Image (cartoon, rainbow, N blue to C red; front, top):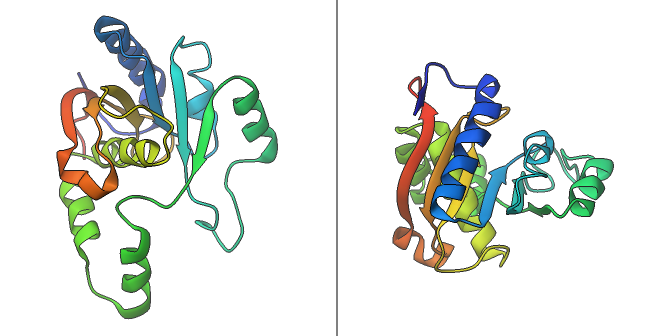
Length: 181
């Protein structure tokens, strides 16, 4: 399924398509990118185990966290586990680039995935991050939901690998994504 444009206007349709696919394939785990928690909130009644992957603390500035304490408490109370961690395809490579300039392997990998769309890159990335944190089971297909900024416009079926075996990650299906990249 392809959306005409990228962006948050596709969030509800993306979540609906992801849940239909989860039901069809009996997939129990959903990993969703959500910096504020708004997109994750839409999965509260999904009947699935949901992990919300947010920006790492300090992304917007030293010690800052984009998601409010109230939203974090609400999501946790409703059974959604929230992960704040360094982006898999940024991390130390980004720090080296910021300090010294240049382009490094993880950034090249991220740019390559972005050729298919920002949401595709996000889905692959958050799947590995959630697996590395032990929040989803190894060896199972999951649904990943990501976007091109705010909201969600991409959903995929992925069998993620740990970051130290990143290239063993398997994208099984692209459920939906925007045609506009």
